[in-house]
Image 1 (spheres, rainbow, N blue to C red):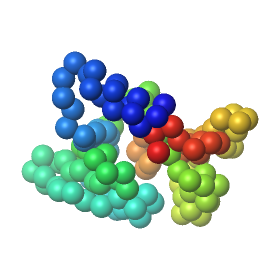
Image 2 (cartoon, rainbow, N blue to C red):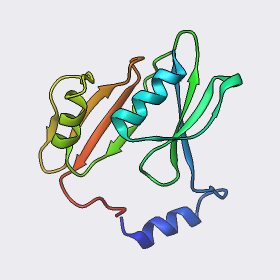
Image 3 (tube, one colour):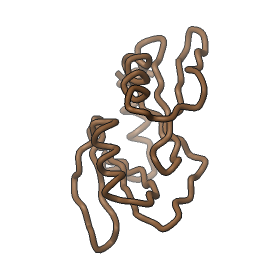
Image 4 (cartoon, one colour):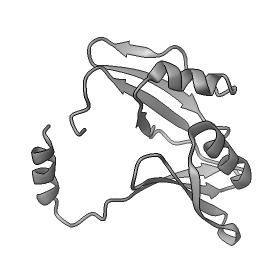
Length: 138
């Protein structure tokens, strides 16, 4: 899909989006999770509402943040946010060297994409994806 096609698709949307996406994740210890996302993925705190047990951390992708909500027992759901990376082996090695748990080996869907699933301290699943070819939105 070309940039022009993406713009055309956005123009056809039934309402206007503001260019931001917040992925909400339940965590059992807000401060521990902030530290984990900062150290492991390079995210930075945008704001923290201590009295509500909530914060948002900025991903390296403009307009995309994670909302971390402290709950007694996080419900790990079926959605798996997937982060596009330039070098999946380097990304995986970085996290594994810090003890992050991965789900098996990196999957290689020949000629298309490589995928690796990993987990935060509460068991929330995330995935790295490395496209075999230039991403269509780049």
